Length: 317
Image (tube, rainbow, N blue to C red; front, side, top):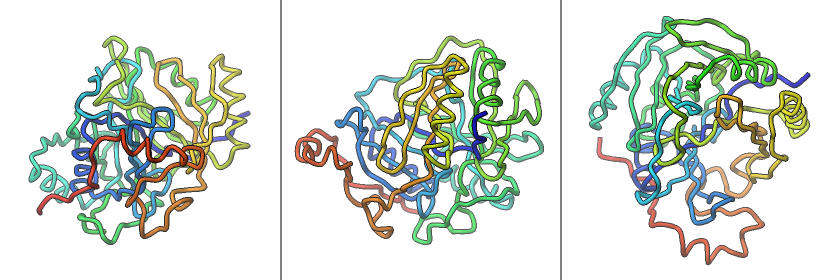
């Protein structure tokens, strides 16, 4: 029997212009730029991490910015439709006004008796803010552009769009330990056994063709594991389900395994550490380009091929 994840670890998507990406997630959404590194499998591409004040697992949305010359993605079956962050119940008006003041179209709706603000980032990636009274391990960022009482409090959920719910649900329940909680208007809600922030996962069916990976789409969804020993147990459970998981891979700030679930979504399982202070002091997170030891000898060549980027700028309030 595999372990039961406590919920989401991070979400990784593909952006266009790196400057525009960082300016939005820091300057508008108020997340901290906690790591500036490169895609280990494509060192000519940045890998940005945005999270809470410490980059706590369960708060980080990460990006491979392909620049505006990158191939555009197409949303469809087998992809993440929306990534949702938790906000305080009394922060709905603040966030509605903040987003609209930056020219962002916001749709307000009610779902499972909770208020949801739905919008898109500059590359068309679907985002939501869910107002709910839920526990969170998110750490405030005192120096951020959003007042601490209104800051995003880590992930609430992701919504996966698939051709058929059943095969995806089987992996969620039998491998990751999620439990079906409710169904409303064709939305099937699952919650991790551990509960807390980032514990919700919604699955919806779509009649769209299989999506195409590219700018404006989510690359993968990662779940929390306490250790590499837990990862090994998940890996065996994947194999028993007929999936083809990767080996455990060292990603410097955590260890990861990957497997594509039957509905087409790429799932990652990531450990809780060692974390982002493995190569930077807490007060300097995200300020410089960090590389894993095995790429350090290539630093000069890597820096020469990366696109221009000056660091995130907060727009005028």
